[in-house]
Image (cartoon, rainbow, N blue to C red; front, top):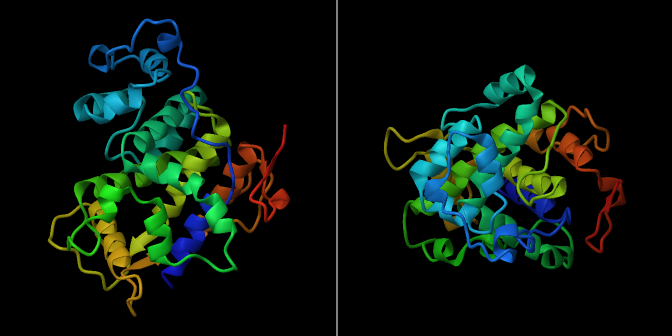
Length: 295
């Protein structure tokens, strides 16, 4: 499959025009009350309630990103580890539907504590640019230059293998995709922290788009013993480094990007159900880059 299939998926995500992520922390109770920011180092990482409360503060995600051990403990309490699969989340949701809120917060933490959060924000800011196109999907170089952090872009074409920040970003997206896929199958998409259901849908769509990428059969990683996320990151890095290569280092699973049937909660399409759960009617999407959401 052509590399532009990835761009079609990512551009689709970017053009949905969901609610903006630019003002997520305007309502900071601690800051407005002049009480300062709670110290994430003092967080009770065994309590999902304590985690959810602190997630309302402005510094939570930044502080957690700088404390990987605490982040891992937080995610574990919310039901997510490095080996958690969609099946694991599905089983947990079936046993206790109330855990959906924990999983939604875990997915948000995965996104907002790596460069995945920067990519999501940049995708949103690029909607007018994408909509102003003359048709077709932007090429790999165009979209990557638009959404990737400058620190990552500086390494493209210089480093043969991706920087750790890029690998972490890919891991965040794929981990979040496991969660969001299970939430969609369970017909639930809660809000999390200061992020609305529509924001979560945007995180989910970006995550599923990246999760749809797999290394091509002929792709050879830099060394043996790499994790699946590391190999995927290297394949994506190769695609970014040489977007005009005759043989693509990546392939796309089109079933994960299926939007052929949309608009009804319970849709068998993951993306279709996520949109419906967020109240987004894609049929009302217009060339002006807006969408209509149902009450």
